View 1 (cartoon, rainbow, N blue to C red):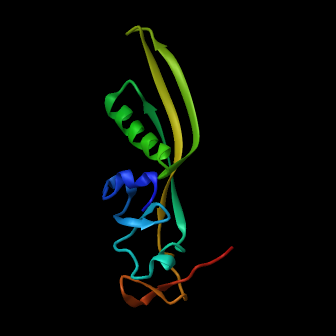
View 2 (view 1 turned 180 degrees about the vertical axis):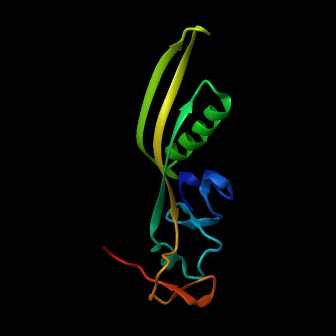
View 3 (view 1 turned 45 degrees about the horizontal axis):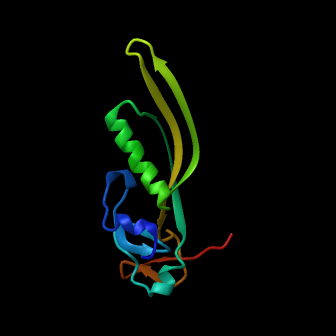
Length: 136
């Protein structure tokens, strides 16, 4: 893997929604139980899929600020894409403190084997689990 996302090599986090396999292809991890048993050039043809997320972060809350930085770091390094952001700064008059809320929409990117297939490429060495590369 020759990309900025290699910074996360080996990362497993429940926020990904599934196991990640490293190295993947196209500079991204493979999402699934195992990388298909194919040649590297075939692996590079697997589709990049995205899973959309959104969240409002209160940056005055340390736990939320940490989660926000986790997402932003992966956006900056090409593993996620930022789709939309809105920031709001308000003064908390009771505490005389500035409060920053960030609404963020992002897409987490992975390489993943298609579920339907007739390409002859097999997932996990099981010939019955074939998939195709569709061009739309």
